[in-house]
Amino acid sequence: MTAPRETGPQETGPLETVPQEPGPDAGDWLVAPELAPDAADPVMAPVYEAAARGVLALPFCAACSVPLELEQYVCDACGASAEIGTPGREWRDVPLAGTVHAATLVHRREPGLIVAMRPYPVIDVELDSGHRVVLTTATPSGQAPDIGAPVEIAFRTVGAVTLPAVRFQGRIADGKLLTGD
Amino acid sequence: MSQPPAIVGLGMTPMSVTAGPDSYALATEAVAAALADAGLSRDDVDGMLVGSSQGVREDRLGVALARRAGFGDLRLVEHLEIKGATAVAMVTRAVLAIQAGMARTVICVFADAPIAARSSVPGSAGTLYARSGGNSGVRGLERASGMLGSVPTFALLASRYLHVSGGTEADLCAVALAARAWAAGSQQAVNRKPLDEDGYYASRMISSPLRVLDCARPVNGAVAVIVSSARPAGAAGPGAIEITGTGGVHPMRRRRAGGESWFGGGGQAIDDALDMAGITRAGLDVVELYDPFSIVTLCLLEEYGFCEPGQAGKFVRGGGIAPGGELPVNTGGGQLSGFYLQGMTPLAEAIIQLRGAGGDRQVAGVRSALVTGIGGRIDHHEALVLAREAA
View (spheres, rainbow over the protein chains, first blue to last red):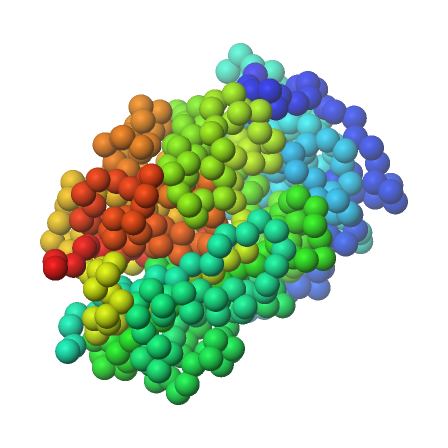
């Protein structure tokens, strides 16, 4: 089964998408607007600007093309500088595809910050570009996917900021149904 | 007479799960207790190292503690910050400062008070953690994606570990039960009620696969440890604890597709500390690990070379780290069932065990102990080998 690793009495929810209550402002399905990221943050601004266009952009070392972490400022492969706002940090559009590196279903919902009424997934994705990012799903979901499952990248909006998010692929893998949402 | 730097005093406040004095007041109380334990006065102390929890706290402990706790002139005052590895590293820094002649007697202090007076509801420490982190940088994206506090972070790590090792939640359960079994014998432990598998599985899921009983127990409290080249009168009672080995390693793993970013590299700190002490793993009588989550105990048993990769779960399920097991680990209940004061939790327990003061959870004949602190997502490792000083 594709459900999270919960076989005890805490088992929650069916495999299928769990209907979620809309937020109080009918905004994002998961979090309150106060959790909107700082769109002007120079570290992350190119990600949010690209996301608003439906594109996933991530940084690479301009010198040797190694995919960089979002908060990596020196290339660990070649030592080149990759400071923000310099040519050494090259932002490229990357494919909207990856696989699950790790996943959890978060049951604790902080009052005032989480508007979803049910446990929600947080997924660490290995992107085809070589980067790793931690995201939730684009639309309401009550399941954590299996590690290794292929996923697509879609988008959601929190406050005024568009963010990358995960979309499950509805397909059969290893004889198991990976349900879509 | 000057002798090698050794631990000569330990002071602990009661560990409280309800709001009370702030971290400065708690630290001052722990300082007084440590001085009394060592048989020293404030005038005997000429160095202070201070550690505190990360994140924004109004009462976050800093070097102002020197004045607040009533000290006179000091030769060394410093706030150290290596995330969770700080407390253990403070002892190493104290040793180095004493060996270098910067100070003779250094008090290392850590205090935390995450349970705030303005909220009396259970889980208020969780609320504090959930509301910390800001909205910039990668954390901004992660928090907007629902990753609040540190539990989901370690839940991701746990899901990956179980995938890689072939483990199951029964492994996590076994760690939590072992910690609770040790805690039953500890006067300092907060969670001492007997726990069985049914109780574990019935506990609230926080972020799969981590239940509340897989998570450290936040408390308000403080611990102070005195390192000195003198052997004050008080030390004649409990006896000084030698610091025979130290080690540290900070693996710079990258988060990149196709590899592991949370595991590996930490064992060097233990190898170095054991080499310095001139002993092997087999020579350790107790192992006190930094265990903010049950999963971390499993990771560290393998990372530190006590179990082969993927075998920690089996070892723990077989009773290997529990009372009566072949490798006593976190003998005061650790951070899971004992109390969460970062690196002071394993350090204090090692001192208690080496003094033979462990009461109902005392391991027989303890002569050497390993203490480790970790920081970040198992990114920083600091280790000490401690030994009972020959009379």
